[in-house]
Amino acid sequence: MTSKIKVDNIENQCGGAVVTKCGGTTTITGTNVNATTVTATNVVGSTAVKSNAIQASDGGNLVSQSGTTITLGASGDTINLASGATQSGFGRTGTVDWQTGDIKTATFTAANGEGYFANTSGGAFTMNLPAGVVGNIVSVVDYTNTFQTNALTVAPNGSEKIGGIAAPNNLSTEGQSVTFVYVDGTEGWKNIQDSTSNVTGNPNLIATGGTITTCGNCKIHTFTGPGSFVVSSISQTAPHNVVSYMVIAGGGAGGPSHWSGGGGAGGFREVKAPDTPYTASPLDGYPTAPNRVTVTAASFPILVGGGGAGSNGSVSTFSTITSAGGGAGGTPGAPTPQAGGSGAGGNPYNNPNLTVPGAVGNTPPVSPPQGNPGGFGYKWNCGFAAASGGGGGAGGVGGNSLPFPAPPGVGGSGGNGGNGIATSITGTTVTRAGGGGGTSYQQGRGGIGGPGGGGNGGIYGPNGGAAVGPPDTPTPGAANTGGGAGSDNDFNNTAGGSGIVVIRYKFQ
Image 1 (cartoon, rainbow, N blue to C red):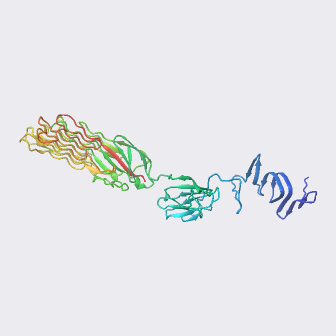
Image 2: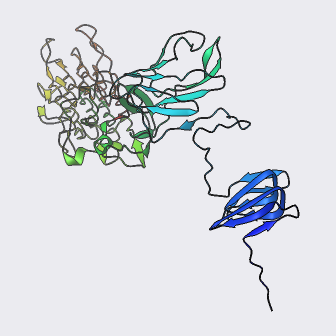
Image 3: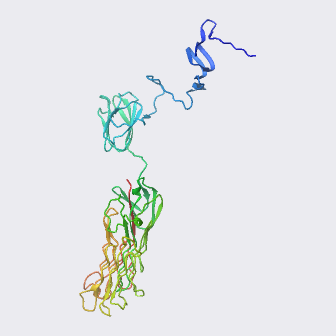
């Protein structure tokens, strides 16, 4: 059997009310209330309420104690000071409450303990500091990275100071963030933290590999040997992932005999993407689809062709782009000049024909063409009066050999190498891929190497060119130009110039 005692009021022995109930309100009144847990709608105590926990009517803790640790509220609760209430004994730790829901775009007055995001993209404005109280703190940050264009003015209150000077200060550095603390009347607001770094996610293409230089908003990766173009992050703007490039193969060797043709230049291929401004060559292959390269986040092997020595030059490659090596001049055992990126000059050595065409260029064929044919070689009789054609260049065909003003029937002039072609993809205008000059027999003149790294042709025989003019010694193609070698005069091989690969893209 259970019992219930129902009362509206409980009084102590002196007649004072301890617990009273009126409607839905229960009131506990007294000098000391001792309990493990006190749960009530209203607790009114004149001196003390002693308890390990005070609970709200829904059973959640308002205040709880464990040893010497007192906890306000429970996990997930928000504890607020009442409007107009102040706190003491807690203090700040040098931080502010960032006002993320109130981006500032016009002049405003800051409050103690708050940090602000200032958007000056629409124009400059002012942040007025509050009246200085020792220990007050205010922060501000460049929200749109536009302080360098539209500065934020920070103004003190009345005659108060910023860093000891009673005057406003302009924040004019891109991405700047500043924290001020009010110290005293002498220094006023002191800047305790100033960051001018701009740490953001990079929305542009990021890559490594080769020798990296910059030109305006573009990065340039230059490869003079094998390597890899490694893209770690593509641009968030899709057209920026279409890169500019120049791919030049190795130049062909000059023929080793006194009538062999000059070496052809290595194949020259280029694309200028719209977002990478520079002066491209006439061989710019944009926007033809097979010529465009759109990079992804991947590693792209780079092959840079070596110059040929007794042979064609080697290919250079980037992604889907391959440039063919320059053609080699003919040899006594294989008199036919070789085709390639640009073809070698015609070789009349031991050839029964009086006119010998140079080899074709642009082999294998691409559009725009990567090179040109070599020039014609000639014999003026069935004897020794002969000279070879110049190798083709990226910008023009090899020169034909010609009679030379020397004793009749004795010599001729080797053809000049074909012109190379100029581009400023590296930031500087440079001509590359010139053809090698042809050689000549006694008392003639070797052909001049084509502009763009082509080597000069030599002269065969004891009289050489000294009596009638230079050059008389064959020279190789220039390194990293893809220039064809000049043909030799005494059965030695002159080597073509090595190739080069350049990649250019927008990085900011």
